[in-house]
Length: 353
Image (cartoon, rainbow, N blue to C red; front, side, top):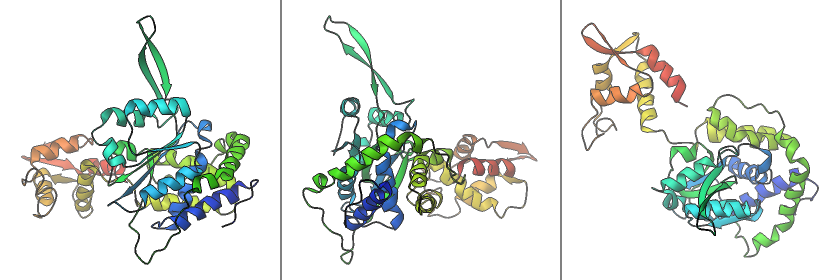
């Protein structure tokens, strides 16, 4: 494909999307131009107070995640890629280089690493992206040092991650390439070949960054507030590109966020609410006995609730405790504990996608 005109950011973003499609197999077209918009946004980072992370996942190995990271590295602002990283290295490289940080094998790097997960979560907004460290001074004393965690970040891994990371991310699901699906191999010097593209985006960002970040965009309020915040920078870039880009980013938003494709897996609590909602849909009374609700949930022997605790089904006590976390409490009426349907419906409205 011919290189874009250095004076046309629209051509440049389109070029990146086409290059992604040429080298990577995606589930659908929305993935390529979503990533292209996200890459463009890495050059505008300092104009926003919030920027989403990019989380690339697959069910198994050899689904193209590392290849996609290499493609992102070729175009993103000051990209640095690592297969693993320690908490101290994480904030020191951000402090010293301000890179777009690409972490491969995130499923292994982040698993059980509470300190690193906390650092990553804090970097979601500029206001919270601060780490206070104590460092020794030459005279043997200690001083407080403030370090920034503010940088674009990409994580690639197998399976899912903690909800705290996923809710701060735009999520791209990869699949293994079939024999019949052909893509071009990127040459060894692909990164060097794209230097002029990176310079072009940087020049545009220096001139237009503030005006793009100030654009007033309309995003349908059909997802969580955090999802809307995550997507706002991409909508602003798309609107600045004009042509059909606003329609394309809206299609991507609907595909990846609203339709729940590649989005957060449900927590145990929201899975419980989802199953209860199915029962409530056909329930005519304003109340449902707690015993009846429990019986419904454990009715099928292959259900999660029947085999919940080492092969034992959930109990009334467990169910009550879980629902209390969502503001739903039992009431004792007519010699039985009951749940108010109205309270359950309120929980559905608040917590289910």
